[in-house]
Image (tube, rainbow, N blue to C red; front, side):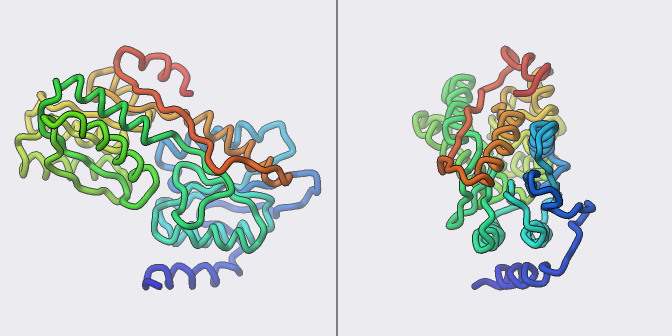
Length: 317
């Protein structure tokens, strides 16, 4: 067992006595036998993608006999481990889990399983300890469509710099697989640089892209694996006087969609975050009631350019 996993597992045991989640006060679960209590563990509420899922979960629960308790890990895996242990201690009926990262993501899954609490994983599915059902965009297919778009726009010629998300997470793995498959069909378009971010953040995108362009001035395409990374990369390209670089993202965040509309980004993949949040709540309630669900419930991501972005800005799917 690694030192990190040992430390996190120890934190999990210690967290059993904690009665409040970091950043939010809790009400006791199970006060009403007719009320289904769902714990929603969000990776980082500051990210638009996760915030939209939270909003959709809460909106779907409104008017039903469902109580949703939200915990924001703020990007920290150790914090999230403690938060999910709190859910278990309270005896929630089900958990919606968006892992804060790949590190120790399996620890909460195994603890919830030991406690007999079903888990819906969203966007990220811990390797070796998957959720009872996993809800996400089909990122492999979507990233391949994005790669095909890049090939079309560049005529299949150029040099690509990739700004990765968190290494080891489901979306990073799947987006890499799909985009790489597309580029394999176009030998004239080659990846010349890649570097991982730690939090999928815009400032990371700027710093990584700045370094890439200095080391590889031949770059003509930048792919930020999330819209925030792509927006940082676009700013770096402009700062370097490189208006010739095609910048694409992934997520369909509000800021990303607006950037596609104004031409800052050439394209993104719009994920159906509202639909995913709604489905996550529905699935959690069904699992709490003993229903069986498919292992995966993958949703379609839509290639979004200036030609079709307006409806997504007006009403996010």
